[in-house]
Image 1 (spheres, each protein chain N blue to C red):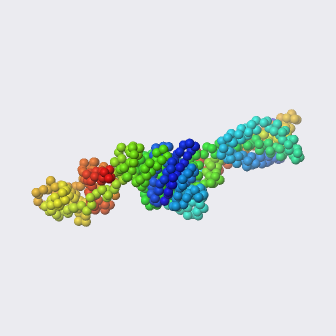
Image 2 (image 1 turned 180 degrees about the horizontal axis):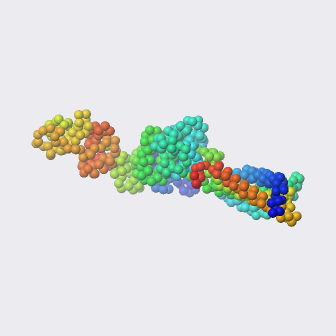
Image 3 (image 1 turned 90 degrees about the horizontal axis):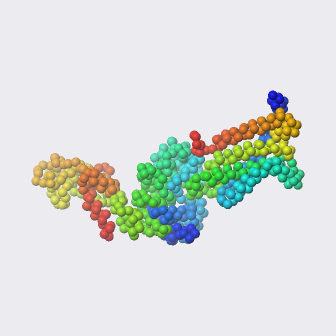
Length: 218
Length: 367
């Protein structure tokens, strides 16, 4: 019962931390989409390039997040940003790459080749083909990649508290250092709820953005 | 007009298309025909530069296509593929308007045209415009595929086995619809097929390919009558003469300005007319010239009276616009050796006989 009491007494703080968390993840996902989707599109033009890029992105995923934060400290210290918001965002952007690049690549490669032939044969340029055909058809799968990345980053961002980036991880780290299960549970529950809410919101967004002609259940 | 001038395409050491030269006249439906791997599809795809020729040139209306921007060129050429390739994320209306939209046409104008085009292929615009491709049957989708290629009114249409994936019954219907459309629009069509029956039905010209070379390029009837070598003869089939029946209209095979009698004529007049023309039958026409019945010489010789009392019903009539295949079929099913030919109004125009058809088809072999 102590946990609920703690939550009840600290609602404004929880809300602030949640906003910090959302801000951290939101910024990093927007940046990750801006880099990951173009990379995913680009590598559809070369199989060899695609293999390499996907391999590197997968390898980066295996670096433990806490180690990645640590690795960024000496690099970013040179511009006086060794800890805090910036390294957290950079790490999150890096983690989000794989699901976004991989899903973009797979989705575009899976577009029926006859559609591509029809599009080219009718006189679409590369960008028109992307805009009118490939991206709209690939969109549901790309959004699924973003959902994976968001859920992953909500979890990873909780660890970013150790480099002073704030967010809901603060409750967890304090809960551990002060042996206070109320704070620990508060942080854990809030992170989980945030992940679930974000996931379902993106699912709804996917439904909204997908052309009715592509829906399997009309 | 499309002119291919010594067109060659090599993929590595394989020559897919080897020195093809031909002229497709404006308004022609030229079917590129041959077994798979003969180079017909490669030849077609070089016309809209989906494949770049190794050497040789292509001229459309006198302009060397290699001097044009590929994207601009493709927008001026309608393109229909076997897999149809409707964009599943777009409505039927937006699919049809793809090229007009790329060309920046006024939206109202292009949407109006989409509705008109759908009507041309017997799809109700109020039902289909807002639908998505997955809600249409294969045959309906390919109708949309064809009108999509026509949307920006290109002078040239390329069709890559467009009806190959459609069931036989629907295929016939769509072929007929396309022929009707083509009769009206008179596009220059290059059509890839491996089906000789389809080629005979659709083509004004047939180009037969083997191993990348153009073996024979001629009107369908000439190819069926005079295959240039054994390969072509085998390819067009042992029943090639029967296939030709479909290419000849009754009007072209019938004896015109036939003698006839009317109901009031005496039997003696009928007999005299038959004997004068060396006929054993004569058709009786109505007052305005509609075919009403017939008399047989043996039944009336030596009898008295008028034609109207002895006339028998005609066993079968054939429209002058039908092809000989239908005529022969009607002869066989009625067990007769001749048919009276009438126009759409039922007026008696002439007659076709089995002998006449045999002679007509035989003539081109003896030339």
